[in-house]
Image 1 (cartoon, rainbow, N blue to C red):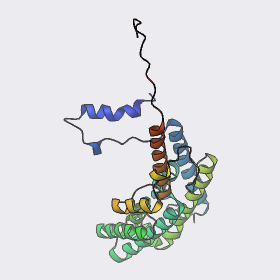
Image 2 (image 1 turned 90 degrees about the vertical axis):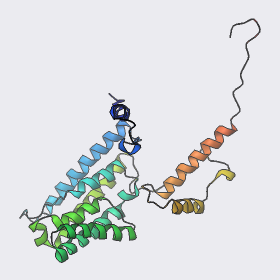
Image 3 (image 1 turned 90 degrees about the horizontal axis):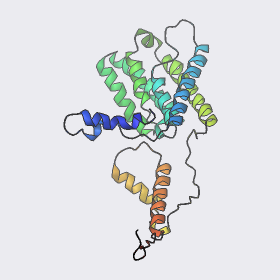
Image 4 (image 1 turned 180 degrees about the vertical axis):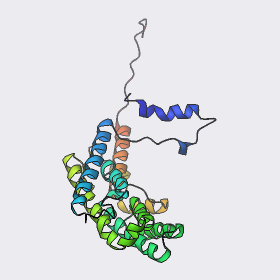
Length: 259
């Protein structure tokens, strides 16, 4: 059963007509059973803690729920991929703040319409990318602000403070505590450490060269630049070490003796 997830892509590919396109199959995920359990437990703890603490601030009328659905998406990022640039405190807090402000403004200007919803999400993506605070659940926050119903519309900009920012702060605090208790760095900081496989100088890539490569790539990558640099250096070091290793001698069998 432990190998079942790895076999599923091949199982699906064997049953699809013709050759299955690569985009249709799930890419490999470097996540063992222990890490999957840690992430799942973290999402449970994070949402439970956020819901409980947010309920303490509840006005008691129940008009607007104190735990909004986008927090579930934030929990996936904060507890399953805490090293992701999209999961850091700044994108969570700033991204959700901008999304709530934009969503409420769009609802007031355009009403709870499809045009208002589309405008809210589009403007949210534009502003959060400029502020370096892209956070996918922020798109859901913007939609909730526009299409959340009469309760959200009546709350107006109070919806920004509670529940959006309150939930965002609480789930970030929960992520900091849980990730540190379970041995994960959050907020994530790439540490420059001496690697046993450090490549020789001629194979090292400077930060300026890495920035040029990323600029030429032209797409946003869901990995911190320092983490990417560390991976590149580790890979180059392993490759250069393999090239320096002497070849394994092959001993020919003595004449008249079976190999």
